[in-house]
Length: 243
Ligand code: DC
Image 1 (cartoon, rainbow, N blue to C red):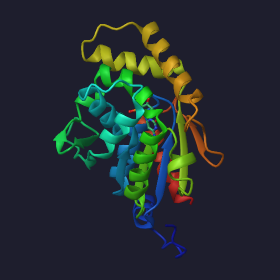
Image 2: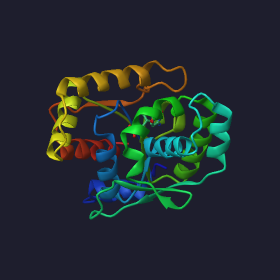
Image 3: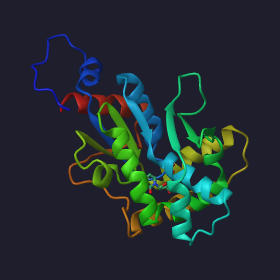
Image 4: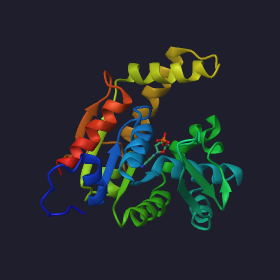
């Protein structure tokens, strides 16, 4: 909620943003750095970070474990409805940006597996699954002081967000970042394959019938090709400050 109180001289941006309890939406394609940036902004201003992609990933893990075929939408939805997906903040010493609990089990690492990544598009394009998770996301965001990242936050989940960011980078830059991350942990990967996967995921996320990846009309676009992570974080905090 935006306060109409006059700003005190000398107040710094972060303290002011913290006090405003804003709702911030960050959307954009895979690999643009949304989760890194959203988590850092949340820490800087003491907000709750909600990684909505992690919720779709947890739902996908559930479906895969239960061996429900990806076209059995009713069974899939019923199972997700009976289950509890929770997000918990982590501290700076944790390797995870957020802790994800599925029926009280910590699945933060499992939801990042290749198997889950390959199936998540199918699960997240089921209307009933989206309705369940969007409802949960809105409840979590209800009191403000939140930053959500995903594909449809500014358009569907929080059309009333105080600040909407569309964070993107060219496919080549996103592929290079992913290539560097994977080679740094010793994986033997091919740049062209990664680039192809990114272009393919963009195409699916942008063209799906339900809640496609789209920049909200009132979103501010940040193209991060030539920016560092901390430059993006600072830009977002300054934009909040102007609200
Ligand atoms: O951001 P991510 O890669 O963890 O997201 C996983 C998948 O979930 C991605 O393929 C798109 C989907 N997703 C979605 O449909 N809506 C959201 N709000 C967030 C993610």
